[in-house]
Amino acid sequence: MVIKTDTTQIITQPKLDEQVQPSLKRWFKHFLYISSMHNYFNKNDRIQIAKAVQHAEKGHAGEIQVVIEGHIPCSQAYHQNTRLRAQQLFAELGVWGTELNSGVLLYLNLCERKVEIVIDRGLKNATQAETWNEICQNIIVNLTQKQYLRAVTGGVNEIGQILDQYYVKTDLHDQNELPNEPIILK
Image (cartoon, rainbow, N blue to C red; front, side, top):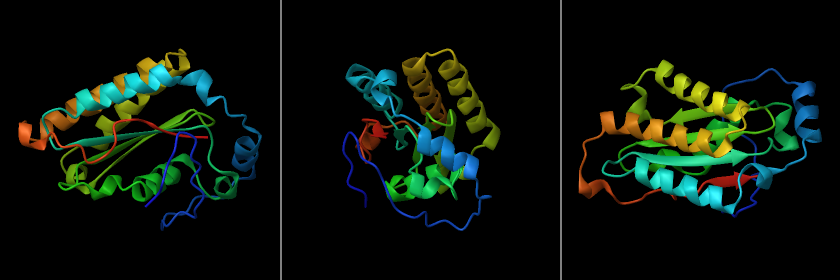
């Protein structure tokens, strides 16, 4: 399990079978990226994101984990794209470990300006990839308009609406298996 703080950097090798074409260009991009994470999401923004997650998870077993990362660690950027990084974090942060396999990871990579959503097996067969891709595209539209908080909270709300469709509404499922606060990685 990963121990995380406000400025955690996760430095491990991905334990994934999928291969990505090595890219020196991607490595340089991440190596030269200067993190200005706090210019995008200040403390108040992070509180608002946590409230959006709490609201989106209300009444069902679905769990949402938001991870915002400045750049992929240089030790991994040559061999790993944002999709693999999101899958790695999904595993390392235990998003897959919810009781009803109802975890969803919303991953933003600011250097690449990409958004990835990784869903657990409980949702994989019940939903279409196009649904998740549409949410990612909506987030990217807001990010390009420099509406960073709106992008993340809007994406969280859309994910919550999907979870509402597939999980029975009940007060019994209001236990929180994952933290609501976004994880900020440099």
